[in-house]
Image 1: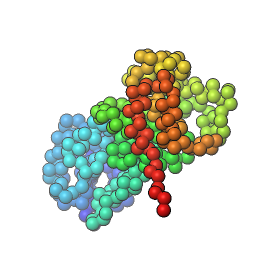
Image 2: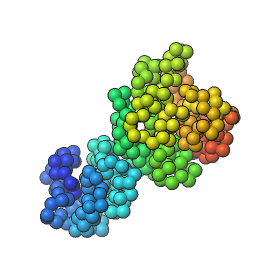
Image 3: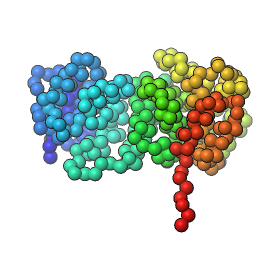
Image 4: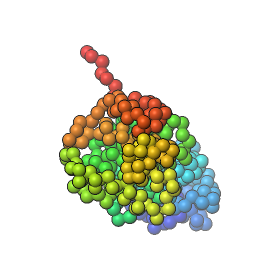
Length: 355
């Protein structure tokens, strides 16, 4: 078996990574800031660099020139800003990019796929299950009552969702996410997938798409402080429970207010239940007081809630859910609802022909 070469700026972290691979004898560590040149002839190269600065990128490029042959797969683990890191890794020629925060969940399957000789490429469904599992792991670290998540964690989650939606169909993403047992995990990851598909349909650039998906992941963060008995109640809420649930936008906004989040993301968290006609909550905003980004998330949020199964209701078919969106009239942005038709159609399960 050809060995795996790990290029790292932290040998201690590199050793932990090697142990995670479960093949210590077949793994060689190379200190990116050491004096020696890396060896050639590896079957796989993994980079694990804490910050892709201009100097570390220069050293990585130099090491890859020596160690990598044209057919050697290269897996880049990215810390921090995944969007920027993914671009830098691709520029270095990475075969695959993973967020370091999700590497433990995905590493062995990813390495197996990159190093299998003559093996068929993994199907999209297998990759999608891995992506969804990693996104769920990241979301679990976002959805915590003890404080706001780090920006890097949210970036990782958004990048995972965006990548999954780029590589597969939105209805397949929704089908995988529907199997998750936690209502809030399921809902927020559904909204994030719909937001990514909506961004793709609207032709948004990478930055705006990532911004939209980050807002989707965070929009219900305030529910982390709502009692679990209410969140997961297997029946409709009482009026008192509904009032408690309706506090989540203001609670979420308060959780993030000192977390260095941009104003638009803060607006998504606080205002995703506002309606253009002023009938929403918590502030009764109307018209131009509601930014476009919030309007997009509101549409995806309502649609996701309609197509989701709950103990007390069956999921609505995508076409029926979209008809309800259209029936809401002046509450929602009509132009955006019309644009969402393509997303709703992509969520529809094709009807089987009669035998």
